[in-house]
Amino acid sequence: MQPSDLLLVTDISTHALSPDGTQVCYETRTPHEHGYHRRLWLAPASGTHDATPLDTGTDAWAPSFSPDGSKIAFYRNGDQAAVTELCVADLPGGVIEVLDSKPYPLGFAVSDRHLRGTTPPAWSPDGTRILYPALVPNTEPGAWHRAARGHYLMDGRGFLSDATVHLFTVPHSPEAVRVSDGHRDHWDASWHPDGTSVVAVRPCAGDPMLQELVRYHLGDGSESVPATGLPHASLPTFSSDGTILHFLGMDPAHGYRTRGRNVSLLQVPLSEDAQLHSLTDPEPVDLDDPQLRPLAPADEPLVAAHRHGSTLLVSAAHDPDTPVAPSRHGAQVLSHDAHNGTVSAVLATAISAGDLYASAQNGTTARITHFADAYHDLTVAPEELWAGQVHCWLYLPPAARGPVPLVLLVHGGPDTQVGHCLDIDAQVLCGRGYAVLMANPRGSAGYGQSHATAINGRLGTCDVDDLLTALGMATDRPEVDGSRVGVTGRSYGGFMTAWLSATRPELFRAAVPECGIYSWDSMVATSDIGHQITELVGANPEDWARCSPLRLAKNVRTPSLIIAYRNDLRTPVEQAQRYYHGLRAHGTETELLVFDGGPHSFSASGPPRARVHRLERITGWFDRYLPGTEVLKFVQ
Image (cartoon, rainbow, N blue to C red; front, top):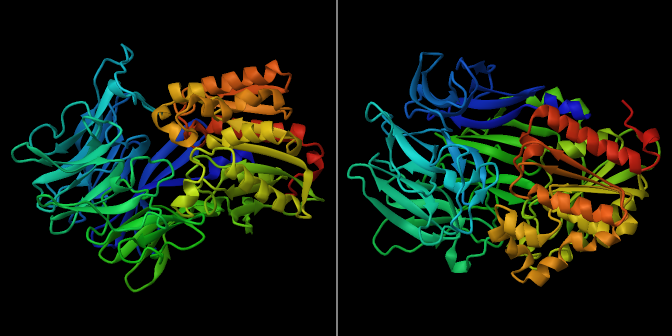
């Protein structure tokens, strides 16, 4: 792959399976030079016929089938700037009805810490109403901003006091009816089977760092709280008889720290004095459901589990070890749905950003889309290796002449995982003639809770040991020139790039730290998750200094290209500015590259032209400082 080849990569952002399991509607996001085009498609789940585009008039997203399968609800851009419409279309290809139109985002999806894309509209069980969230402004844009609590920012959103995510229903009256009130966000709302109430997650009033499940009774407008004081909660879903709530979260019985904690499948009966109960063991089972629609099926939910670089669909309450088709080892589930015995899923691999598959009750699996075919011949499948206890993936450019230079690419998080998913940075570096090493050191997800929490309070210790073990394995390979090694990474990977440059300067000839953490004292004060980040580095400011690459800037001799995003509120641009100044003050060759815009996910969600330029600058930096690269370019 070359940098401009990212324009070939179409993503399937969301999808929905029809109630009878015979059709699937999916949303594509296709990049072009000036932005992205979002479109809805309808296809048979059998994969026997080509998909048909839905004529939605403008960009459309987040489809949802009505209970009888005769209609699809979705959002689209309105005729005026910044207007979002909630629409319903009769199938197939019928008239589109606009149910709501607002000058602010509909379907706005959040959690306690993150933006999460778009929540699809949720039909009531009888198909007469639709439930959806919207980001409702509290102040006039740009007038002023207010902070009155510890957690007051969110990356990609700004000051939390500026707007609140409320719940609405239509059509129940001539206009949309707001279900929630106050100034607390709501997320992951779903219906009771009898249609008389809805449930959602919101922050606790007394401590907004904790969450609770709130049930709104639509008849009299009252509310009840089935569970409160939760460290984390998402996707509450009623059982089919309406007597139990299943949801994903963290059991407060195991403490209130969240960093590195595995997410469990929990349940709470809707009876007086009912007790919260965990259906999965949080040590081996690591759930991270990518869905933004209710858990399905309601009584035995299929959920996504991280495992050794894969993300598998499992029946967590009964058999969390066996993948449910179409998921499989060697792939990551990006979204899924299940109805009437059919299970659909978008599966990504190391050479695919994701295609849609569906498995029927008779055991057959159909591939519905073929978007990865557009760039299949440009990608390289990595070798999956273990360096002792460290799980690694090594990309080797085919047909390279002689031992090639190596780039160590460190993932973000740190409690995420790399492995069986397309990494465009790795593919482009490999296409440029570099071997690329990626690994899941301690602190990563997918290897048990003890593995993920091992670096809490020990940042830059055992995780470094694991990365160096992996690096030693890779540089011992005859295909790799261990004298020409670079290092790069984003977020936690940006921190680790700077940390390795300072503590192991003899190993690396070039470095590209991106939106990293370089000084924990200001990170704690200015990041939107500064209130939580001390779980990684401890509450003692002396520990913050110990873990700050900026303190060790005098040791860095590795030429460093520092990349940041102006509107990144997760790792604010001041981190990059301070590190850049620190390196220059000690005579290290360095450049600072700041992109306009944000958020923290800019490398994947920013304007395509900026994303291409970013890749050109990263590869150009390694070309410049890993000598001899020019004769080792990928042989086309």
